[in-house]
Image (cartoon, rainbow, N blue to C red):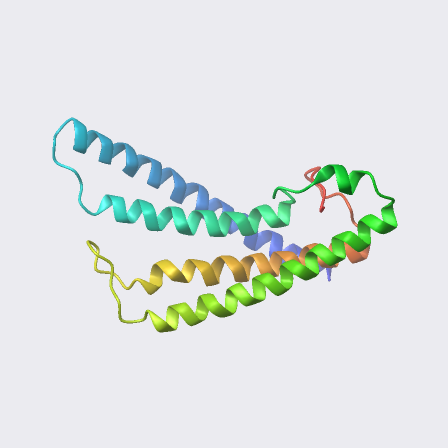
Length: 167
């Protein structure tokens, strides 16, 4: 079980590194777009589409990483005011609901990819399914992270190395 958790942490670090680079490139492209549009009066036509699609990917994959690190919004006052056993039960229930939701999101994300297979985007003319595949990729990564959080919760590990709580 420790190997699974360690492998997931390595995957998350890799994804986070790629997201950091990607976000930096998006910020740079946004700056260039503003410069070209307002200073040179000649906007980069394709940049808006690249920025929009990139932000979709960044948010969905970033949410999966945030789930693992316990950084998603929660009602802390409820969790902090209950005994440890109730906290663990609540955690298991929340994870169960997340697993069901993320499983459905993965299923329908894959279904959307298949449905939109031949459609292309406006200015880039890339398959629009590349954009919508972010739904499936993000929800599958989040589902895997949710399973790892569940494994740690069952093991009794309530606080992670970085100081954030699992719930």
